[in-house]
Length: 132
Image (cartoon, rainbow, N blue to C red):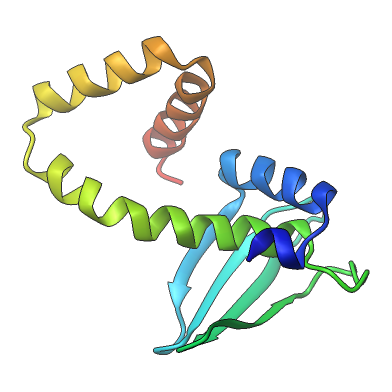
């Protein structure tokens, strides 16, 4: 669906925003609405609102000035975050069953194999230590 509604450039840039952790405060705003803030180049985050029904995603809006008849990078980033969150639920249940030592060992193995993941884990750990 993302490829249908967004340009290649918006998909590429939206993926980069998602991977950089620019999607913030992803939350349900009702049974069929998801809202999130996306940090972009502006000082104030953009607000994205996605609405779905039994047919799938039926509305996608963003407060950014991009209006090229396709989804902007912020909408793409939030859509990817929703997909990631939906796929992460079973993973989270398994992680919650592990003790601290097993979690540290698991993360250590994963970051050894993936330098991009290592950078993301480092940045997220620093953010958590700062209390952000």
